[in-house]
Image 1 (cartoon, one colour):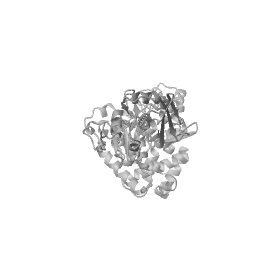
Image 2 (cartoon, helix red, strand yellow):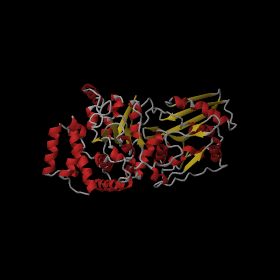
Image 3 (cartoon, one colour):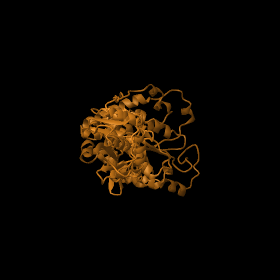
Image 4 (cartoon, one colour):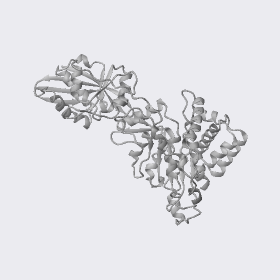
Length: 507
């Protein structure tokens, strides 16, 4: 008997339909699996047969053929275990084939029949709803993320016997209710706050501007000046995730297998990889393309501490994600794209010993060591960072102060107002923040008067800035004006934006 079951394969951050066709006939016992199956799918033959045998179904006198269509699409992972087992049971006439119509299945099986979590269930649920599925059966550990998709009944299961009993009409499967979107948690009061940092008002202002426009930031200063503390407080001043942003970020985390027992992301991602990371770990890759840290930070923050300690070719792999907001990975005859619209926040010492420019401690580095240290960061990457912020060591008198500075909550309110201005100006199809302004929209929203144009032209000539740096200054000036609620750019906005190019001034 021939039976077909609906499933899907995850490519990048989206899913494509796969028909699992099983033919079960009498004869010499065989299990043939065709349809360009990867190693993980090939191994499903052992798991599926063992799980079916737990039901007391004999397969010793059956010739089984499984086809995964379309046959020209490479299938990877373990998500085809459950649909293959369901189709096999139906092909053996143990459950009615009609009960499978319109139902999508996904999940990994253990030898005992337990249904285990898999990657990319949210993307599969989105695809199932798009093709008009009447329900989707998923592992219980993946049920919350699948329930994010409205209008699609989600049935969580923990064991294969539950699915078989449901298909036979002998039992019902529970429906997963979507988790309520969490508001501010009780732990917010204990979260890192800008008020904890003594002084550094210039750096705090720079973080506020960066958060308001989604700009990239590089902080440099001696050890212990507060660079890492400042970076880890940036998520606290960013506006909350909108539903569309949360859905996009959750899909990426689902594909990476990070959303088990969790629903929709409620906080902006903050990723801080170690400097020993490879280029595949940072931007994505491997033989089966997986999202890297830049994609896991989508709509959030990617923090690179001790920036010059990262290998240069790893840092240079950031150029395209920073500029385009997505990563395209080509493997063999297929190409997948992962979104990567993130804020790049980096920190570094000014020299190998860390005290170049420090008025209290002498620098021990030679000019050659200093030049070699700075050259670990390529000019093209540095050009793509909007803001270069000097973070000097705080004085002992400043550290001894007991009064607190401005809280993250107060700064976040100003950032939210500036982001609201940008959303209203961009409209439904525009970009969400000023850092993504390009082409005609950039020229239209960042028009300069004569005084501002003269200041910017002089800075470009004096500092030798590139056309990219010129445009990034315009975007920064637009954000500074939005924080003030100003409709037009003025000379003070442009002047403040220029002074954030500290490393260009030093060079």
